[in-house]
Length: 215
Image (tube, rainbow, N blue to C red; front, top):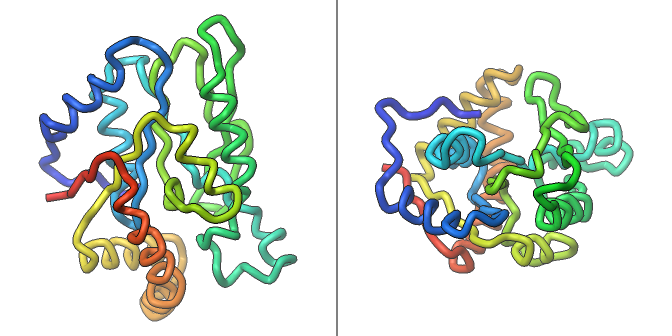
């Protein structure tokens, strides 16, 4: 997760939109979509805080990364982060469970991606049946190819998270270096893998209900 910009104040229009979404007290699913390094996880945590204690849970799409051993078997390890390196059908199935979760129902467990080991961990996030808002964030919430096409229908709103590309790419380089790549390898990965994915994601911006732009 990126460090939250300091000082950080969630804009009043975003807070108002969040509260309007939650107004009737029924389970809502809010999606945050944007390119790698756009600050989706930072915004998700800020919105969770703004929703109020116990009112929201964050379920990142990244928990559905295919395991490294499977990416190697498929010959996709050098494209990790591309649409076909996730279990997109599994992600849609989880969103369906979260939509159908009832206040008197069971806990739904979701996976989490751990950057320190570059692997997903099953059952790491507990979504209580009483939680009125689930915030899910990821790259391909508005992608319309294969099982990804089913994601948007599971969400009540999707916000596109926008930021200056130069700032975003520097964040990505710093992230890749933090988790083991040298400076050259980090820049190569951003140029060869993250950049094509970012262009694919940017093409979905017009389908979002709202655009959140970082200052």
